Length: 465
Image 1: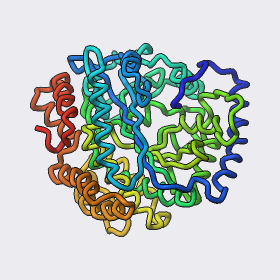
Image 2: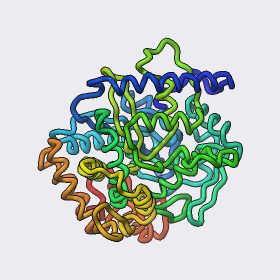
Image 3: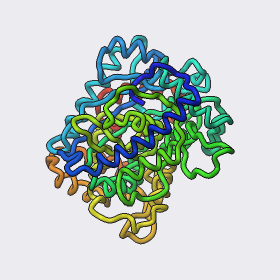
Image 4: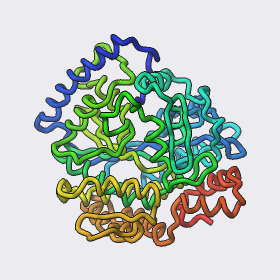
């Protein structure tokens, strides 16, 4: 869904033809993945940073199109809400000092966007605390056909309003605009096909304790909810299941329901089998190896960890790790990336299919709800453990895996020390927001302005006053 479309309305015949092409392109993808030597190459990483634009008071500022045009930077694209932008960072090798380079590019682009916003600035935060129901009108959606087409496609499937229930919060909305309340830090890692299943399963396991140490979305619409409220909000705000679809276990935003047994193909096949198309844009004269319809369809299913097929340079596979929140600072996001990638690489060395998938599933949602106070399980350890203790216990494993992947000791230790200090002090972005809001007497506008000042310094959140 990264490109705009030529139109936003589609006929039933186009939906039928699109479905036929999905079946055809699954076969093409299978042949590609089975080709000897396909997708081989060095391990590279990339990332996408979603940002909020705010006015001088700290309220959402709907000027993403004007800001993007003034920036004239191909890395910066529009997001769903008019108060959101996305920055696509430069792919780089995992070997060397990737986290220092990643942090530097985050800082550079964040400062650049912030300076360009007329009448305000930009900040990376999971959910903006100053959002109100008035910010989610139909006019809040970015003026792009792809977003209007996606909204129509989901409403074609779900005749009922979208229902959001998170603790005491209950909302009913007519389209997917609530997704604009969430901004994420999405990490990509390249993998050869034969290693995909182990790496993907490892990411499913690793994200629980990592997310517990990264919470940055405690507020929505004036309510204190989960440490990572964004997880629940994203799942419910785009759930196309209604009374007509009780048979499907997972929504379009999902953790998943089982380990991958064979490889990436089984996930792509499941996406075609279980999910109806929402944007049936038919390509013309495309190279069959680009499987454009299959890639477009896959881009409308937002599993927290999901496969990506990229046809560039002969084609390769990536795993997109989508569960981390944006922010608080460049140092925090680089550190979160290091911990997630290191723990994923370390767990890929074991066969996880004998470990109950339900345990990994439960870890993920407990971490989103309770952060470092969550009770988590782990393969090889008896019983449940407080997330903060488990994180500190797992950091050496993440360190060893990153060193084995060629990351320099300096870069590994600098990044993972941020996680260690944040965990020992229990000073996540969510904790800082809660404590600061209390000190400010509940003034969310002052909270956001102070957050922006500190985020722009680049200091990790555990050092924020």
